[in-house]
Picture 1 (cartoon, rainbow, N blue to C red):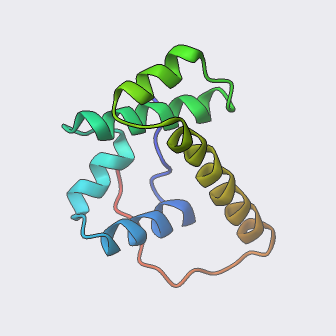
Picture 2: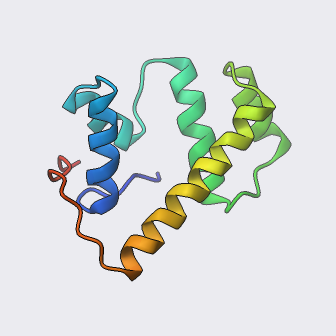
Length: 108
């Protein structure tokens, strides 16, 4: 199963963002592992993983499953936009060896 990196700039920056949204450290570890008890969150996690694993070549049934989880076509497109923005940001930071002033992400 796909997981976010356990100890990288990606894990650090995303964990800091999630903490800012009021999530606990355990919530963040669960999200990074793809674990949730909320069906709507599960649909988002599963769809995002599908988009990443297939490099965007998701099936009609993948999109329907996402929409059946309570999301819209526009939100399916937003997932792709967010992935693109995060990829661009990460590539820029890697190329420029940007130092982030963030605490380390918890190990998963």
